[in-house]
Length: 177
Image (cartoon, rainbow, N blue to C red; front, top):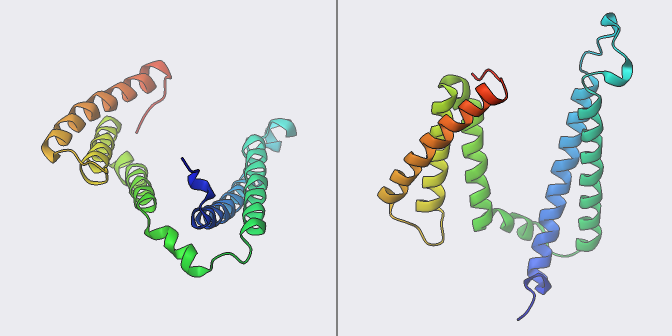
């Protein structure tokens, strides 16, 4: 049995993925560090500088930026001269990229549209329902029948939506939107 990572085309694709991922993490880490730096320091309340609200997120942002830069530089050095823009653009035409876009789209709709517009339990129920139906009936290598997936997704969606709401409200004492 051969190692799939030994395939030169797979290595080129992985270098491109690492290069893009490293760049995204570096930019995201720097953005987090900047936003943490601009948070109020609360000097007027006599808060010690080591306990300011943005300290831990800022340090984590810098660590994320550093790790992203290391990953990107490693991928750049290993993939220099291998492939071109066509290899880079080919990454976006894979099944994995489609699945990633589906996950990202569902998560963004949940976070930016459903939460706040609907009660939290209903937004969570809708998200779980949509996620299960999309990945079992449409994006699965072996799709299941839509009606069966929808029924299973409805049951799981209600259970998860109600359970998560109860745990956060009564277990963690967090008021949900």
